Length: 155
Image (cartoon, rainbow, N blue to C red; front, side, top):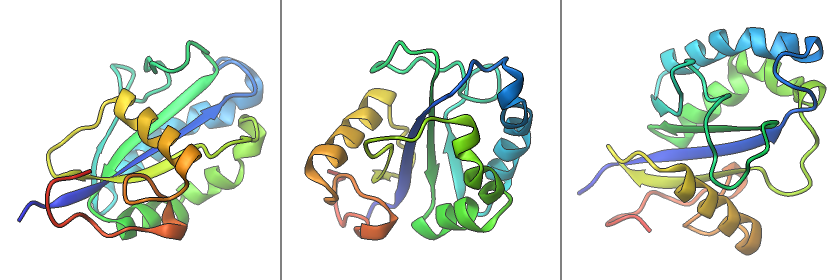
């Protein structure tokens, strides 16, 4: 039987350019927060470019240079939840309104991928669009409505 991991996408639009002093603390914290993720139990993979993060990653749905994307894979919902809400990452999460616009639509989504599969940004955007239009389903969901990993081929 195949093993599945949890994929996660979240997007956010910066209030200011990356080199603006008003988001200096966010930018300066990226390396340590990414290192924390990389070393967290259950971490599998994250999108990054040569910069070591994804601040300069091209996202196919937006040419907006203020739009940032985070795409990662985790062994389980518990491992992602532990990193997101019970590590030093929470300090940055609590400060997100200092650096990012308040979203008007869901800006995050979870879905299952077969172990070893790396989703594309196009697939991730399709999952987010599905979540925005259909609500939580086995194809796209969030922590408040978790669906179990598939028993066969992923959706």
